[in-house]
Image (tube, rainbow, N blue to C red; front, side, top):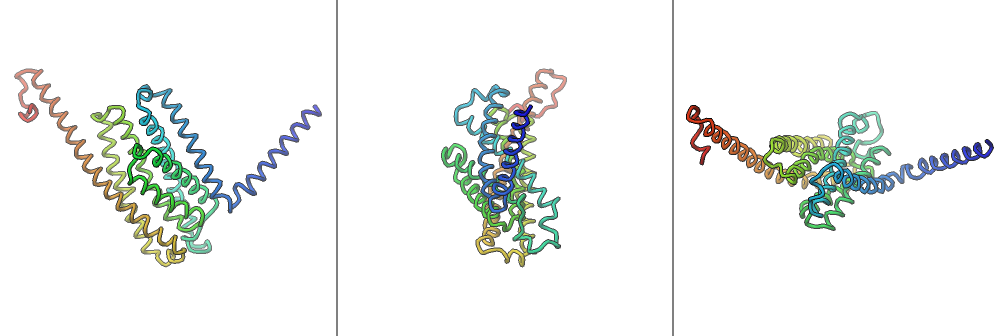
Length: 302
């Protein structure tokens, strides 16, 4: 019993020491950006490995993919998890939390931060570094130059916001646009599984169109309007942060418009193919049913 009590006291002592280490160093304000960044990189590794393990166990088509396809499969699983995480946290800070909108808090909202908001951004920096490293290492298999530009600009802006504490509200506004990432990745999964002619593929295309319009076009317009109406507080940032707030969203907005044009073209093409398939089915059905039903269009047989 004495030995057991001594062991318990020893374990409690180690727990207290670990708690103090966590509180006074790893989660202390000066160390939060570094701790969260390393935690984000570690989390990316764990999620990537879990995606590989789960996919190999539950999806039969996974084992038949090429090596680079399996890597992209796992990579898109990782980006989906990050998108859900960071978009949810961003919506919390922008919509529900009053941390950046409370007029009673000291200082302009553009230079306001908290350990929690900094921690969330640091985790996202870890993701952008990890994903950018994979894209560059396997270039151009996981994405072309536009992906490198997008991740580089996003990573720099998020890292500056996390380490300096400036412009975090606008950083979270831009990160809400990650809401479109799960649908984009799901479309790739459908394509890889050979389901381009399925109803799910069409529904996914429509969802991407409206999601992109809302989260990457209208949201950016609102952000630029917010910057304009609060320009006096934007000016209180350091010059580098000020330039990032103006330049990075502008470049990303241009890229979003370019991609939106491709989305519209792809959606039109998908809907046209779907209509051709339906017309062909109607024509074949009319032929099978015989001369009693010959109301189908001649064009369906062409």
